[in-house]
Length: 209
Ligand code: SF4
Image (cartoon, rainbow, N blue to C red; front, top):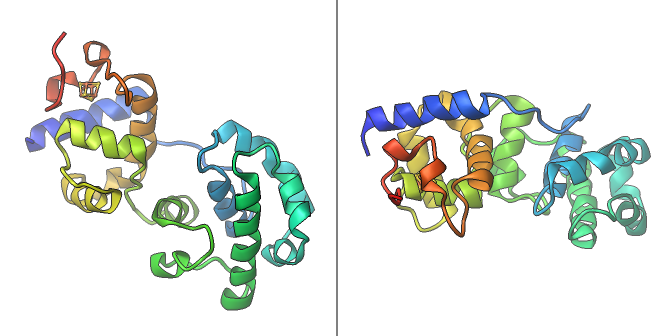
């Protein structure tokens, strides 16, 4: 992998997919964390549809922590895995209330102690809520980084560490949504459409037509 190639890929991604993505609507950090938790294996659109009534019903993390589980389930019923997510939301809000005085911690290690919060959720939250740079490695970032020749890691954490070395810090937050768009439309999991790919010139795994 040549430095020049990485630079060309990054500039192309900026041009094609833009440099910013609107985060989930929220007024308080715990609401954003809840929205990101809900988005696992669900579309942004599905999440956005439930947020207004969810925020109206539960105005603080404490209120959600005290609510009957069925009420939380009822508010997010249209979201995939809603029972599991409702349980995690209630537990997570209880931890935020009892252990952190109602404030979501700004620290990765502390975030990872919260119910339902994994590394991907925590990294996205820190980036969107506080602008803290981080590389979020989901299935698209994992696959495309390896195809481009940017990373060889066998799991998301290894790839995250590699990408932090390959990419300038100012690109960390946006590489996630850019590669998600690219992974959904062109560099798909089953069959990469290399002939239509704007990154083909700099990709190690490109398959010639
Ligand atoms: S050239 Fe092919 S493998 Fe490489 S990023 Fe593009 S679609 Fe993916």
